[in-house]
Length: 224
Image 1 (cartoon, one colour):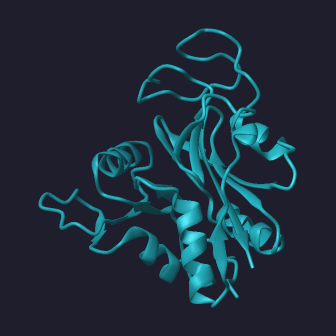
Image 2 (image 1 turned 45 degrees about the horizontal axis):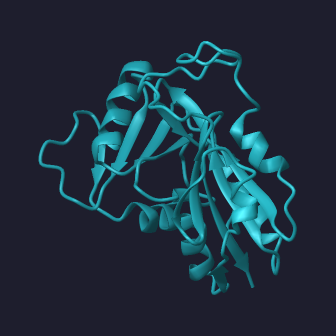
């Protein structure tokens, strides 16, 4: 079974999964806000102009994370910067490694109507957002007032998904935290808990979500 990493590295160790526009933006922003951090950038396409002082790995981000995140991993923050639901795709990869079967589950319209501004990506996945406008790339995600509307924020989206009651689905949510303006990600213990919570709900339709205060993505799946 996957084991939790209880190591505490002396300095920040950050993994950025995806080396496209958003991954490179995350690296540059984190280098300014956390200059002492050791950053690893994982991208399957060759980096013709690799960022300085960054360890670049040429590999598929999901597969690399599935191989390297475990009891011996010395990572303090994980940044998803791939055009997919990283937490869920990583979960599927780990389940496959362990020989545990799973399947995608259709998300009904009645469920999605209870979430803000849902946009289906396919029958099993949808993106959701409190915003019906383009948010600024450097938003600091303030606690109470939206930086664009200047109105009070609604209930944080990660909490809204977690509180959703729509039988037979059970929500399993990982919160995306803002580590720098416009850069969100997970603490490793949160990703570990996401895995453990999903595994404890076998044979149950799951609403698997990743969300910050304003934006998110949800998948339907069941673990056999």
